[in-house]
Length: 295
Image 1 (cartoon, rainbow, N blue to C red):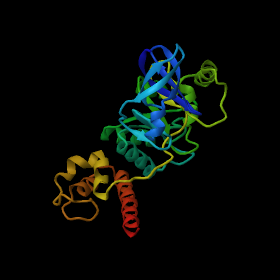
Image 2 (cartoon, one colour):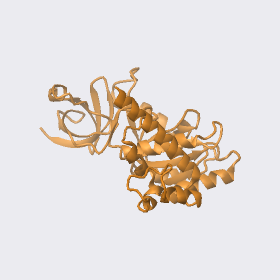
Image 3 (tube, rainbow, N blue to C red):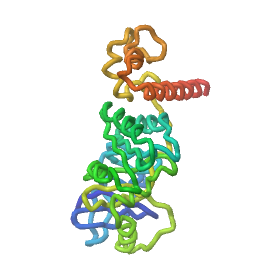
């Protein structure tokens, strides 16, 4: 029987739907996966043995470049981290925490500041420039006026992406604007797969007309930073070129003497709010280490 490779774009009730050059193949996983305690994930690249044109078995899961627990997905390229400039008021510490979590998971963060149709235009531009200067992709968008949507689409093209951010910032509205019939396509896909509308919650990658996939549910419900405290500084990209000049190799950039990072903050070279985010997250990581040692 013929073998073919594809990407798992949906999984529910023991069935996995694999997008291949032949179309969507409905698959079961071979028994060895249960035996080896391997659970195929949406996003996995799978080798499939075809039974017929529409059905097959998953024989093998190729090595993953990354994997998230919540949502349970693999091989994601980027996280579109969405915050509104107001209503709700932007939380810079949480924004920077999401960037760190993305990078720890080897996922490229894209900063998206939504609701730019509201006031604070200068604040939006300054904020976007902060992240662009560091080296991140950053865009201002409005689900009301459509501003920034073409730029956002250019970042999504041919990538596996998911949207993350607090409630009320407009993630769903942006996803609907990216592709006007994306909701319709979701329904059509369910019918095409011949399994109707499942009431069981599932995770699904929705294909974009211009190339790529977007996850149908917000990501990063788990925001634990589980790294040694000395590593956190390496996830603030703008620190790296300066910390080489700190007096101590182990400098955490808090109150050590001759710290090149704090000097850069004082000189306005490093954004002070980013530095405040770093100090806040460093305290979190230290507290977590203390609790671990106590246990």
